[in-house]
Figure 1 (cartoon, rainbow, N blue to C red):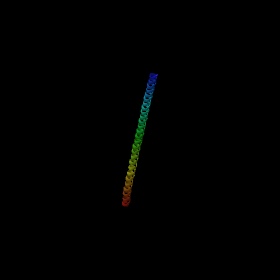
Figure 2: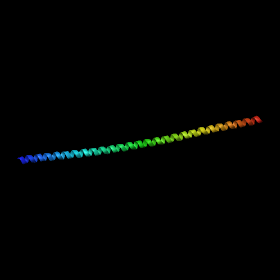
Figure 3: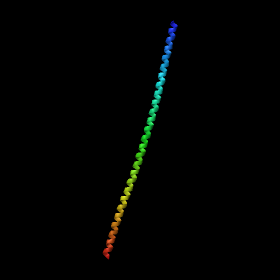
Length: 98
């Protein structure tokens, strides 16, 4: 009877150990999946920020291009105006001589 009791005790102990092992495995698995998810999220975030940066850079480049274009246009117009004024004065002088 005592031996039977002893065996029962040891079996209980074994089962407890087994359950503990299982729980440990489960926790490890959960941690692993959690880490995986976090890594994935981080990568997505990184990609998102990269795309954002690229878009910003592109936009800035376009804006710069546009500004340059308008500046050139203004400069050209100014030059043309100057040229017309000069030509008008020349014409007026010619007229005065005649």
